[in-house]
Image (tube, rainbow over the protein chains, first blue to last red):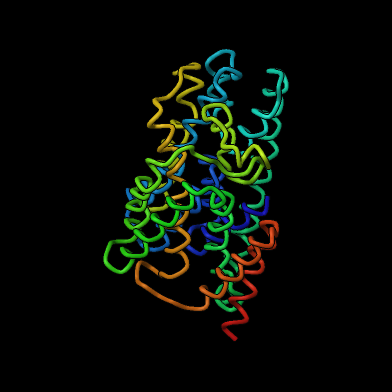
Length: 230
Length: 99
């Protein structure tokens, strides 16, 4: 997952030490939210703004947890430990399996592999860039951050409701950049949700794509005809 | 310092969101409204993040070659390029625009 490199780059660009970048990837382990938070830090935003932006982006983990809870049985400490692996990919892989045994197996192994790769690639990005200095601008490395966000957003744009919501979020943020403190435009963009509120059915990202919320919609929402035809 | 405070807040908060259902809720469903908000929020925030990281620097409007990069990334995504290619294309296009 080269996406970890993108986080490493984003955190180095925001002035974080290599150990801090690694601590984020070990302890937070949620791609989009980590990049969002360091983006706000790099722009000089407050800690509250950075945390809020990250947590709003991660609210979907709550829904993943509901999808996975019936399969993650066992003593509380086991459930607590497994919960750290609750990300888009693990939930998507697990919910694609029919038998509970394979759902658990898919969740655990996808989670462990991605956790290892995510942390290693973070280190590569953060350590690689912190020695690059001036080259960030010359090589266009600063443009990899918006490109990473766009790549995360892209699969959602095939759905009309999601596209509307994204556009509205983008407009809110764009309007506030010049006037609001750093981080606030991103948090305020959460109001973009209202743009997609009334429109049904709610589609989701493509199955198997990075950061897709396929897994929770697969069980909780009726699939739109357009989706099932894919 | 900010980075460390954010680390703690984000780690604790994110873990709480991840573990709430498996550890506390069991298999009980979430209120439908909350599920809907959770499904729509990433689109709204990612849309905002694309804009902010493209046209601002330290909270001031700054339009530069990154705009070329994000355009190139969009074309790459439209051509169904994988993540790593999208990112490299964005960097290359931006670098060329700065020459």
